[in-house]
Every structure is written in C-alpha cells, then in structure tokens.
Amino acid sequence: MPQRVDKARQIERALGNVYSQLLTAIRKDPSYPAEFSLIKAKHQFKAYSATRKAVETVYTAGTEYVGKKLNVDIYQTDQDNSIIKQETDKAITAFWNRIYDDMLRQRQIDKAKQATDREIPDKLNTNYFLTAIAGVAAFGALGQGTKTKAKQVIPQIAAPIPTQPPDRVPPNKPGPGSGGREIPPGAFRIKWIAQQDEKTCRQLPNGESGCYYLDGMEWDYGDPEVKDPAGIGESGTHPNCRCYLEISTNVGYNIQEV
Image 1 (tube, rainbow, N blue to C red):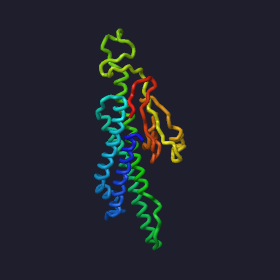
Image 2: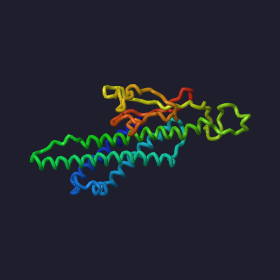
Image 3: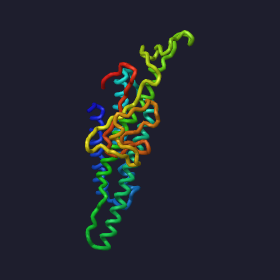
Image 4: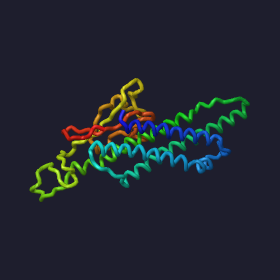
C-alpha cells in the first residue's frame, strides 16, 4: 500500500478516536441532550481543530505525492488553503449533524421511557457514523490534494515558456520553468485505484457503477468529472471508501515511482 494511503488510514483512525472521545464527553455534559447550541459552543474548538489538522495533514500527503511523482518542488498555495478549509467545513458540518441527530434521538428515548417506564433500545449507532465521517475527511482530503496539485503543477511543466520568438521555437520544446522536459499537452492523467476484494462496492449510492468498476479508469488530469474517493457530494463515492488516485502518463515521460 502506498505510504500516503497508510498515512490516511492512520489519520482516519486518530480522528475517529477524537470524535469518539468527543461523543463520550458530550453525552456526559449537563446540557445533553437538551441544549444543542450550548454543546456545540463548548466542544466546537476541539472538533474543528482536530478535523482541520487531520485534513491538512492528509491533503499535504496528496500534494507531496504529486511533487515526488513529477519530480518538481511544490508549495502550499491560497487555493490549497481554501480547499483544506472547504473539506474541513464539510466534515465538521457532518459531525455536528450526527451529534444533533444523537441528541434528538436521546430526547425521544427519554420521553418514551417516561411514558412506558421501560428501557427503549437506541438503534442509532452514532459512533459508527462519526468514524465514517473521519474516513470521509481523510480520504476525501487525500484525493483533493492529488487532483488539485496536479492541476496546479502539470501546466507549468507541460506548457514551457518560449526563450525564442514564437516563430523560431520548435513544437513542444522546453523553456524556462519546464525543467528541461519535452511534454506533449494532455499527456497526464488521473488514475483510479481500488482494492479488489469482497468488500469493494459494485454500485455507488447514487446508482452509478461502483469502485470495483472504476478501478483502472483514467481521466485527463484537469477533467472535472474525476470522482473523489470517499468524498461528500455528487462527485464523491461513499463512506469507508478505500480507493485512491494516481498520476499516470502514456508518453514515456519519466515520472517517479512513489
């Protein structure tokens, strides 16, 4: 398994543990389950800080993979910071939505218990859903880091700046900023990698072909149709997705094995 994927797994488990600890603390809070606003105000800092750190760490692993793969120096840009915030906000929104549902369910259980004077089973496994959100945050960030950094750096090495007048520059010849490489436009692609076993999904929640069939599929590096492993939204797959993205080329450009 690639090192960046192992790191995403580690971050997923660590963030899941933080979410589990927060759930325990929230359920012990005197404001639980009645006062959602007070609960959120009290625990938001820890939830957001842990999520932001997790997303940024895995996102950076995705961008570093691109740099090593293409043998170029990379830097964190304003666009990177914006996407890290965006992915963090999505995860935090999902986290608090689950906490709200948990508190609502507990109020319903308490009300039913008062009416029937017996224990009511809780069928809402909040801890499971929070763990899934941690996975979405980690692997969604890894995919975003790979896609975004590829879009940023590939044009810089694929479209060299001429050092001679335009009518004297041979086609596809390198110039300053190209690293001395000859790279035909459109040479780089994003490749989907799925782990093929009995757990690999055959169909996505929206009815489209699942990760099993996406395995090995390639898109142009700038194609907006590239899906997000574990991402939230129309372009995402599903929670607990174990897929990841690679960069490939079909023109013999010497990319690194990472």
